[in-house]
Amino acid sequence: MGGGTVNRKLFSLIDVKESVKGMFAVEENSRGNIEAVTIDSREAAENSLFIPLPGLKTDGHNYVKSALLNGASAVFLEKKRFKQLEADIAPLAKKKKASLILVDNVLTALQSLGKSYLGRFNSLVKIGITGSSGKTTTKEMLASVLSVHHSTAANVKNLNSEIGVPLTAFRVHEGHEYAVFEMGTNHPGEMAVLADIVRPHYGIITNIGKTHLEFFGSEEAVAREKADIFRYFTGSEAAFLNKGEPLLSLLKENIRGRVILYGTEATAGFEGYENHGLNGLTIHWEGLRICLSLYGQYNILNALAAISAAFHLGISGEDIKEGLESVRPLFGRSQILHGGITILLDCYNSNPDSARSAVEFLEKTEWKGRKIAVLGSMFELGKLSESEHSKLIDFTIGKRLDAVIFFGEEFLHGFELAGNRTTDKNRFYIATEDFDELKNTLKKYLREGDLVLLKASRGVELERLVPFIKEI
Ligand code: ADP
Image 1 (cartoon, rainbow, N blue to C red):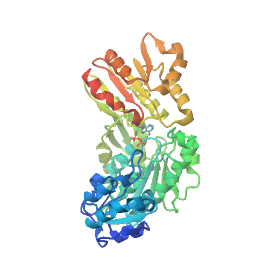
Image 2 (spheres, protein in one colour):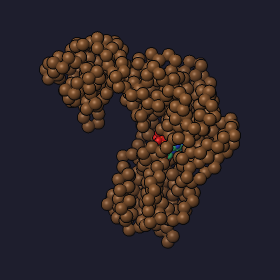
Image 3 (tube, rainbow, N blue to C red):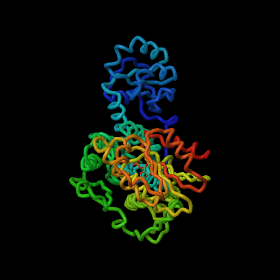
Image 4 (spheres, rainbow, N blue to C red):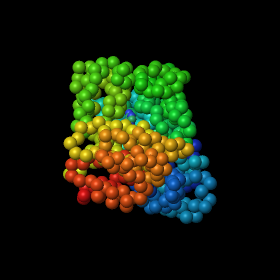
């Protein structure tokens, strides 16, 4: 997998300028080559292009000077910012023999550059993966399977956004046969941009859930957005869709290309599976026993998506088995941390669907000791936030768990509404928005032999509890 960008020509500087329809404000060494593209001035080095993106807290334009001092060979600047920065930056660029390229918009320029770079690899087979959950896992699975015998590029971790996808494009090099792109969207219109950059030959949608509803309004709108991954299909491409997806018919509308359904009812050769709880899953497919170290029943569907795609790409059953068996959980996604108290760390993300799956998983897992769920806030639900947090409380109360702690102010109202259902002499329920109270409660309650699920949206940073729980 992979394909670093070290000492490998990506473009000549002239190519860069032309791909983004830019203009030299300072032209130095324009016959030189660019070997790396970075958005972090600390990574800027000789033969690198620094792209100063606007951020939430700061603007990359404030770091142009440091990128030049670190040796960047070229820097993009937004035209409208140039006048203000010229006196400070132009002499330094000349002195350091670096070029300054003016563009209308730095993000669009990064995307155009990624698209034009990727467009050069005519024989590269590109697979795009999107969905509300399971993208990273499915990407890791498919990339691992393809990598057994083929040189394969893929996103690092989950760099799947309008920035991460073009940056992933630069990881591709001549030797690669496949590139697997995880493509995420949290704003309407974003997927169309990503699909234009990647132009996938194969597109996979894992599922449609209640994610980023704040920006999309409804699950149907989420589905339409995700289906844009197929927007640039021309007839010879293929779409992989989960047969059990409730919004399947909407996803299938207007696809110019083949539609291949996958899933427990659809994947040819699927003969069933065994769920070994925390010890993973065994899939029976085409007479093979594929042992996944990932746990959680939902991973069956992720694996079937990867199996279906790999099978259609002509990958052998042995390679599929070997690739799937070598996948390990990534940080915060269904990770198990063993110890006196065992932690299920699923704090990378949360939404109403994945939180329910996690609660169900905890309930069904065979475990000698007590089971405790710490459920933190689910962000970006917009108007539905309060009701979705209440529904999660209703869903969880009464489940065979010893204790549930709802953490975050979004839960407080729903918890109050749940009234006397939250008082049960065999179970312990509490809701709090105070991190210290959460810690104190855990300190009092937890003991050796417990199994604790930590599930919340990324911003809650529930992993903060890990060192604390380990010390109990
Ligand atoms: P994404 O990259 O789309 O955020 P991941 O593969 O990182 O998804 O998985 C994140 C979490 O989402 C998992 O730990 C699990 O809780 C949940 N999840 C993963 N796949 C699925 C699925 N197919 N259906 C429901 N929930 C899932």
